[in-house]
Length: 361
Ligand SMILES: *Cc1c(COP(=O)(O)O)cnc(C)c1O
Image (cartoon, rainbow, N blue to C red; front, side, top):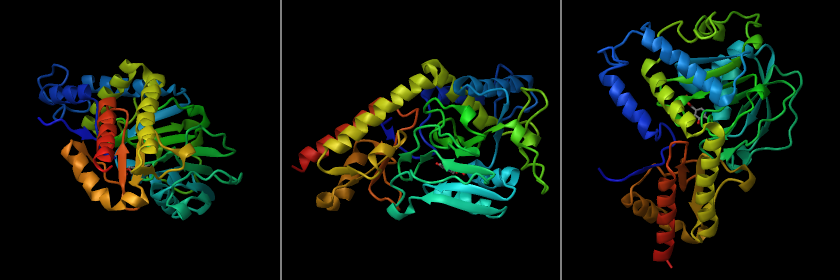
């Protein structure tokens, strides 16, 4: 098989050992003689996987007992309306740092007043707005910690005067997070913790059940939080296979040494690529330096070399780079270097950029 380097933005590269486990589990899950795609989700072996998966989340992110960890379907996009359905009484505040943030705010408008406290749309979301005021009468403040399309990231866990809700779809498990700063964290699994098909929700239990308006059973987070501390997410059939692969992916993160170790590796990988972008005379980064994402690295060709964009794309493709085309709103290139993207792939892309520069001297 040809060596390829997968920089897809999501779904994306997963740890090799998680893929191997998944293949084996499809053949035979837990020595049952039945594959993971065919078992009942009431099988004891499965209940153990569910409990272990939740425990891996709790251990890796240091999630306190007051928080529930649940796994749902529907993707992060479904959370865009489930969040306000469960939490928005009168008004919510949103930080508009990209189209995902904008889409989240749009759904909140179905439930109440939405205050966009700041937006970086004026500069194609190439930076994170800094000076804004969060209204203290808002039911919650919603942020998108990593802006997958534009390559910007909020690097710290902010202090917030109201409940802080974060879409962490594309940077969850990439660094240690102080969960206690958040009322809720959610995201689709397909960027850093597994394949598409499962959505994670971490929510402080005491903020739920305060709505006057009725909340549909499936939308109400309490439905998915079991009475037993380790009996969550089994109200209806959970996405069994994606959860299994998430379990294997998080085991890999734990074996690497947890989030401190993961963070260190991610910083090294990002630095390697950003250093080359800054050094190379043909390329320039699109995101404000202080807001550069460790997960999605966006860059374009300098004005002088604009005409060579297609040539670089073809050159990189020839050398096995996959998924480096930038989103159409930013143009140029985007390399998504999530947790499971090996440093060898980042190095291969850097080498490719160096060679291309040498060829065009
Ligand atoms: C990919 C992405 C989404 C959308 O996720 P789905 O699971 O496809 O709905 C939302 N927010 C962010 C930050 C993303 O990167």
